Each structure stands twice: as structure tokens, then as C-alpha cells.
Length: 355
Ligand code: PMP
Image 1: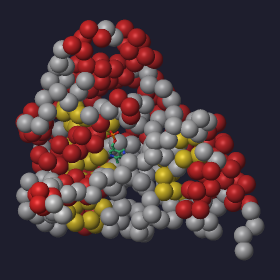
Image 2 (image 1 turned 180 degrees about the vertical axis):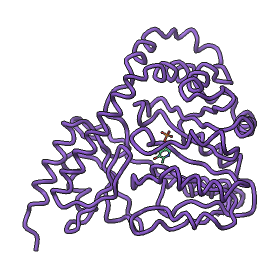
Image 3 (image 1 turned 30 degrees about the vertical axis):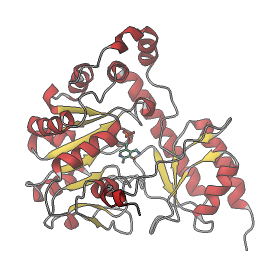
């Protein structure tokens, strides 16, 4: 090791899902939305004048912040925006988890949480989900330095009810509780309604899934003003201009089109429920997903084998070779016709006689 390497901040990075660019592929591996962004986004993009890119964007991101505040019935000082919810969550970890006690999150959850904890040297303890992949609220009653829960959870799709979350908040008034609602628009009850009652609750959402804008990188957090102020103080100590002119404008356009948003999320929910029935018919088992994906296992065929067989057909799904979940595939819900191709392949593949 070179001398200077001793002082390098060494981390094991998060590994995002593949982004293959193959002709004719069916991409069901990173929970993107198969439908285009709202029509107003395309319109605004056409009208955009590159001259504006000469100037820095508004550091307060007011156009986007105000539109989100209106959408959620909150004040503008209750909204924080960032470059995807990954950026928002990373800022929240840096801001709120600055103590010595371990933060708590489930053993099976979004695999970025332990990466940020390690990056920022935040002590953490994973709490095991039960056999049905549900959180056990009593695990979050011990002393801790903060709590992070994805709801619905990833990669399982299991959602905890608001009563359960409220119980956890009641037991943890002196630490920050982050609820990561990346998938909430596809089912489950949002904790936004609890914000007035808990000054320690931060709810994080994203444009990447239900608003079809993963490529624009827009995420946001909602909470009481003091929480948002602390987040902004850290953001302004890190990078004042996180949101580009384009993401501010196009993000605000997407929020304005509520009917389109409701229509596309409903389509995905309907497709998901149909695919659940068909997968059950093929012998798959899965927890009841409220996200835009299904976390499915086949009792006779290994997930790795299926993952590879699907890939040969240019159908990409996500496989996590990790304890407790190595028998599962996470399958993003695409369009009906994409899912029909997937199901037809799985029907043939599962009907092959096996010794
Ligand atoms: N939280 C969860 C639970 C996720 O699955 C994802 C998607 N990888 C994110 C946050 C981050 O999404 P984005 O940065 O695109 O908003």
C-alpha cells in the first residue's frame, strides 16, 4: 500500500442495477416506470432556451419546492429537494445521524443504507425482518441513534401500516425517523399525514418511479421546518446548486399533471395485480407487494438459474445473491405487453420436466 493510501477514505460502494442498452430488451431490473413522463414535461423541454444554462440555477430550488408544497399541502419551508432520493437520503444521514448510538434499519432493505452509514462512519444495527419479511416493531424500541425504514420496503414490496409506523415514532421521539417512500404511490399509506404530529419525522420520496423521471434525478424530503432547515444548512455546506435548471422546470411540470400521474400509477397497480395472479398460477411465491415490482421465488427453480435464463432472452430482472433473499428475483412491473412476454417465457420455462 502506498503511504498516502493509509489516509484514503475507503468504502465499499453501492452497486446499482445494470443499465444495459440492448436492442429489443425488456428492462425490469431497476424499478423504472415503463410509461413516459407527463406530456407537459416534453412540452417544457421543447420550450427550454439553452441561454438560461449560462446562469447558475436558483439555489433554493423555489419553483420545484413550491410546486411540491402545494401538491402535499405543506409550506415551502417543509420541503427539501435533491438529486434523486439517494442524494436526499445521503444528506439526511450526514445531517441527522451524528451521535454514537447505532441507527437501526431492517436486515433486508434498500442496500444503500449500510453504504452511507459506512461512508459517514455512523454506527448501525440491522434488525431482522420476520419470516414474512415484515418489520417487528419491538425491534425499534431499543436505544438508538435514529431509524430508517423503506415503506413499502425494497426489495420485498412489503408495506407497514401507518399504525405500526406511528407506534415506532411514539417510542422514538428523541431521534430522527426517516421513512423512505420511494414506492408509496403504488400502494401503502404515506406517513406525510403524520408530519404535523412528529417533529422528528422525515418522509423521503422520488420522481424516479411514479413520475417516470429516473433520468432527471429528482428526490425530495418532507418534514417540519426545523428539520428541513438543518438539512439545508448541510446542503449549503456541501453544494449550493444541487438541482439543475432543467430538473427544476421539468420536475415542476410533472407535479402539475396530477391526472396523468394518477392514471399511470393506476395502470401499473392493475398490471401488478394481474401479474401476481399469473405468477401464482406458475407456482411462484412472493410477499404481497405494494411497490412497482414483485419479489418472487419459485420452489423448484433457483433464482439464479431463472435470472440467467431470462437474461439470455434479453429480459432483465434483479437478483441479489445475499443471505435470506438469494432465492428471489425482483421483477419490476412493466407495461402489460412486456409482462406478457415475461409470463409466456416463464410459463414455458417452469413447465420443463425437471429431475
Ligand atoms: N429508496 C429506495 C427504497 C429505492 O429503491 C431507490 C431506488 N434505487 C431509492 C431510494 C433511490 O431512488 P432515486 O435516487 O432514483 O430517487
